[in-house]
Amino acid sequence: MAASPSHLSLSLDPSPSSTSLFHLQSQAIFGSKHNSKEYLKTQLRIPASFRVKSANLRLMASGNTPGLTHEANGVAIDRENNTDVFDDMKQRFLTFKKLKYMDNLEHYKNLAEAQAPKFLVIACADSRVCPSAILGLQPGDAFTVRNIANLVPPYESGPTETKAALQFSVNTLNVENILVIGHSRCGGIQALMKMEDEGDSRSFIHNWVVVGKKAKESTKAVASNLHFDHQCQHCEKTSINHSLERLLGYPWIEEKVRNGSLSLHGGYYNFIDCTFEKWTVDYGASRGKKESSGIAVKDRSFWC
Image 1: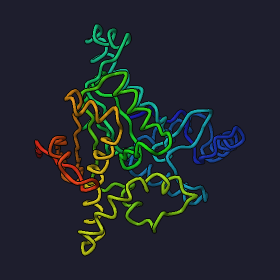
Image 2: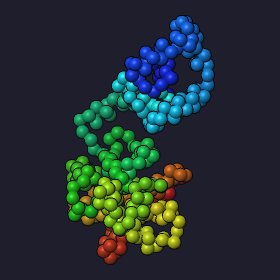
Image 3: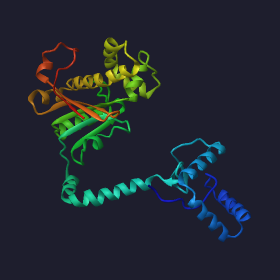
Image 4: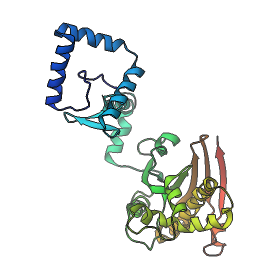
C-alpha cells in the first residue's frame, strides 16, 4: 500500500539525536555496519503482522497517544504501518489520470471551460457516505454539498454554505434535480436525538443539528417506544423529508418546482446491507396537504 520505511528505528522520535543514538546502540549491539545489515535482513524476514504488533507495543510503552499520523521530516507518517499516508492517494490519483482523464481528455477539457451538472446532491459529511462512490457520479455530473446529517436549513435562517450552494446550483447552474441523501447510523442524527431541548449553545454540532428538531419531534411522537437505534433510523428518513419540505420554502426553488424545471428527490443509503431507497416529491399532491403536515412523495424505488 505504501513505501517501506526509510530507515530502521526502535523509536517513534524522529529527531536527529534519537537517530544518532540508535546508530550508536546498533553498533554496540550488532558490531559493524555489515552485521547491522544482516540484522535488517533478519527483520525483513519477520512476518509483517508481528512487526506491527511489536511497534504498537513500543508505542504503548512510550506513553505516546496513538493516532493516524505523526510528522517525520515534514512527511505525514501512518503510526501503525510507518508509511507516508499520501502514497496510496498519490497512486490513486495517477491511476485516475491515466485510465480516466487521459482516456476522456476532450470531456475534461470541456469541463475545464464550464460545468453543467444535472444534479445538486446534498449529502452527509460522514466518511462512509461518498455519493460519487456509491452512485457512480463522475466529474461534471453533480454539484455537491456535504454537511453534518445532510440537513437543509430554513430559508429564513442566516447564511450557510448549504444555502449558498442551493442558490448557485439552482439559479446559476440551473440544475434539474436536487437529491438529499441520508444514511444509516448517522452520527449527526444520533446527536440530535440525544440532545436536550435546544442543546448546548457552545456546541457547533448542536447549533447545526437543531435544524432537524422537527424531525426529532415527529420521531418521538410515533416511535418513542422503540429502541434508540430504531428511533434514529426513523429520524434519519424523516429528516430527509423535512429537508425536502424546507426546500420548497425557498421561493426560487418552489417556483422552478412548480413550473416543472426542477425536481426534488430523497435518497437513503443503508451501508449495513448496502441498499438504497429513492423517492420523488409529488409537488401537486403536496400543495393539497395542510401546512406543516409533510410532503407527498411518488416514484419510490428500492435498490438492492
